[in-house]
Length: 335
Ligand SMILES: [Zn+2]
Image (cartoon, rainbow, N blue to C red; front, top):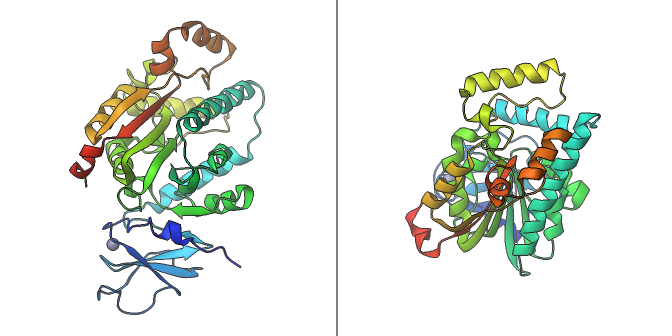
């Protein structure tokens, strides 16, 4: 039997196109009319749906498959999903060797630092916490006990695996730039290593995190830093297409198992800070981190020596990590 979507989760969902409320329909909608009297417009995921959600605003119908609502906006790029699925598969099945073992260990360390920081700051038992672009990240589920954990990703197959592997109960598929949740749904939004997959959409992504947070809610954002100690000369001074071409050539030459997609690009820690302020966040803090992934032993030694400076740990790490609070008074200014 398929898992079903919980009523608590349904209460948070909204249409990714118009933001309207979604009503549960026991079977995939086939009728000519929605509750609003408009023609039902099928999302292109109808195969295998056990239930559907119908938007009271625009009449669109969305599939629920294996208990996972598939809430994609109309402009979703199917090729992008396939590309991301390939990358995720590569990362899940790859066993690091040689130099990659150090990268992998530092990468894990940086995730431990991120989730350790989140755990320190999150207190309460009835919180709603969104992990936007969750990937296969076991550490998120350590927050169980803090409340309702919602895993959100582009790929339904990955969410199914989270359910099977870690008992993830509340799973939603969709795109981060059109978060299908009602305004003010979450006490916390966590987002790890997602932004560099959608660098062009950064302002919209930050605004959508702001929208789905409750006033006073907290954003924990980590991503790859264009101003990282060993990457700023490329990501800041080289034109983006040149950087992309050089990076592809490098990974091909090394036969590297991790080949970043062409659209991936690090984002500037300073720009992110500015966008957070513009979106209405306050108490923004770049959190210092000790781990520095994706460098060799010599690079790591240099980073360790320089990271005695607080500024280096906050602004020139491989990742930036922000903690920011949604200002209560600013809540109404954004859509
Ligand atoms: Zn709608």
